[in-house]
Amino acid sequence: MSKKYFGTDGIRGLVGQSPITPEFALKLGWAAGKVFASNGNKKVLIGKDTRISGYMLETALESGLIAAGVDVGLLGPMPTPAISYLTQTFRADAGIVISASHNPYYDNGIKFFSAEGTKLPDELEHEIEAMLDQEMVCVESEKLGKAFRINDAAGRYIEFCKSRFMQDSLKGMKIVVDSANGATYHIAPNVLRELGADVISIFAEPNGLNINDHCGATHTDALRKAVIQHDADVGVALDGDGDRLIMVDEKGMEVDGDELVFIIARHALKKGELKGGVVGTLMSNLGLEIALKNLSIPFKRAKVGDRYVMQLLKENNWSIGGESSGHVINLDHIPTGDGIVSAVQVLAAIVDTGMSLSELKSGMQKLPQELINVRVPKHKFPLEVDEVKLAIQAGEVELGDEGRVLIRKSGTEPLIRVMTEGKDAKLIKQVAQKIAEKVKAYAE
Image (cartoon, rainbow, N blue to C red; front, side, top):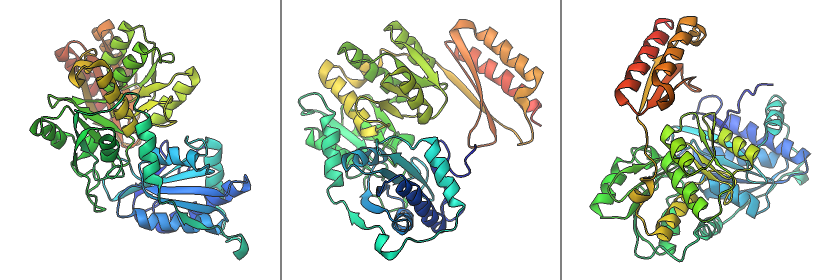
């Protein structure tokens, strides 16, 4: 059964339009509350990022949950992974995050966590969607839920993040932290300061409208300049809700999710702590696969999306995985992707080995990639055309064992993404153009 509202990463949308309206949030809170209460669960935590719409949606969700007879703990602005951790810490029955991650301020979203700090199972999401079709009826007055504010949430999460650093301290290290004017603005700089680092904090003054605005993990130009300007050892860039991490080395060069996964996995291997192999996605650079193979570390690819990386990790009983975009997962530390915890693990590798970040990432050589997006009308299906299939096959033969071809539909836009990858930059560009032209010809 398909879901009407829930996507692979909760519910997303433009604020004020379906489904992210105050009316919908009220009904969603009630529907979720009814489902949780029917299973004997009566305590839910709510956190949010720094978008201007967060307070409005928080109040609506809170009212709906209370109307269903569920108690609500309000955490205030907190990173998404913090909600996962705090839901377990406070033994709540579920956690809710109001955030649209790396998107602009005018978007928002709603994501649920289970009592174990993981994403809700599909069955519960189906139950909530079914309840959304029912008429909203408030419980009797004596059965209404209660709201309470958790004032020490930030401090608890800071201590948790610090506990993931398995070295003595970061004393003597200078770090620039870009919090994207988002949910980590009062968390990430303090974690690293309390571990002993000299921290220069940028983009840590949220005003409700500047979240992810030319800053953070999706826009690292300012961080790269700041690292050079301050002669820093490393730069840390998080996105608006703190589950995505991109770093910058001492030379001002970006270190992406594939390279971070490699550094963390290799360090775990050297310490004898690596469980099995590593999970990437279809978009992970071939250089990651090759570098891990050279270390005899198994590697598997999941569909794009941290939900699918998580599924494959659990199926194989592995711990480490991630995406090029900076979603890095280590289930030995927390049951979801966590940008701050991932940064702490990389910093631990720097301290433990005495190597710089540029030296650590040099063990993996990224291969050139070419990506072409072809716009396709909804009623056209060019990937099913024989001529297109033959063009893809010809490209795969042309690249041989030194490259790969990946063709996929976008999950959010009417696009076919044509990606080629290999050692020869000129060749992969030619192959991508040939396939894209054929896709375009049958999409018109």
